[in-house]
Length: 147
Image (tube, rainbow, N blue to C red; front, side, top):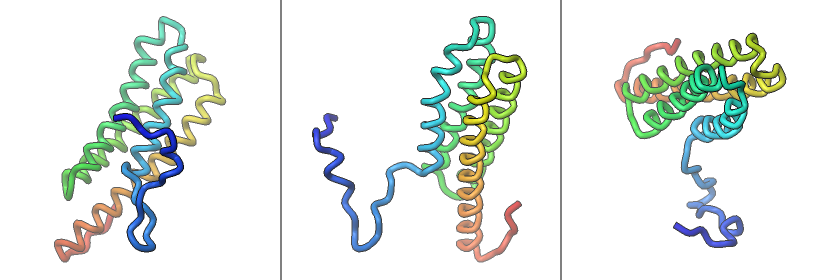
């Protein structure tokens, strides 16, 4: 599909006074942004780390994105499970990044930038999960605390 040249001049239509809903959840957009920044960095790892550690770091972040997309199109318990898996994979990605710093293939500055993005992403995933569980409980009529 070809976008018109002045696509920026035509924002998404709004209904009433409500702002237009973004097409993707904020967590999905942040995960994509993090991957776009990360992939060129891991591609510059030394060869002996690029295809092992670098690929695992990329795969962990891609798995996070995939689980977030599953959550986006799921409802109920399936959404909660997808968000839990995304959070678990995000933790794995954090540990792999820390390993890359300790092996001196990733600068501390780059790791700090990634860590800030990962923390923000984790907070978004957690809030999404909490909202999802609260909505599930309200539909069932029961109240279960979110841990």
